[in-house]
Image 1: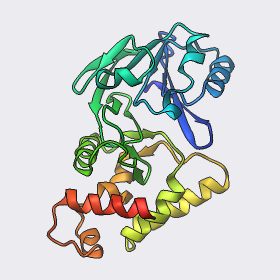
Image 2 (image 1 turned 90 degrees about the vertical axis):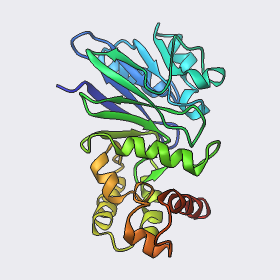
Image 3 (image 1 turned 60 degrees about the horizontal axis):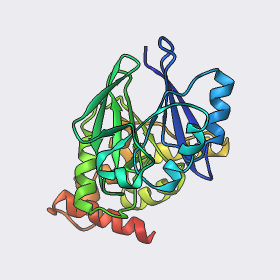
Length: 255
């Protein structure tokens, strides 16, 4: 059975995740925008927080760590490359590292682009990938520190995961991302269908994440820069996919 996953909204549009192993009782929190919703959920479920995994240093992903540590003696994991900008770490990780949680292997990917030192945590057995602001539902993070080439490389790593993987990203940006995506891939019937489902979920105040990687591959323009239809729509037939991706990212920044 997969580890139990709980998706929690936080701040105005963030998500944080709880990952629970019923056998050991261990619980991990992935990114901590604020402590309140996490503490409430832990209390409601009777869970004890044992680990905190941080994807990158932005305040809306680490701002509540100290408040959690005031209540729980949890091990904090984050990128070695970003340790100078993260809360104090008990475990520093880098590309290719792995550790164990709940009897499963957690693999670490460097997914720099949004920031330098951004990591993703992948659990192949349960089928979860915690991608925060790298690969997002119908989008990808703005390039605050990295280059388009870095982000494209990062997205290719994530795209190579099992198509059934659930992409656990960091924000409820999906509806806005959808409005942009259709301008890049206007004839994509899968995208049109997904937009209807997204709008329905948001009308009911339901989260649109996690999302399945196979659906991102079919509808997310940032993963589809090599698609001939997108290249043609952008008048970039024959261009390198990384250059198409850079154009899509630049258009999103102006959107």
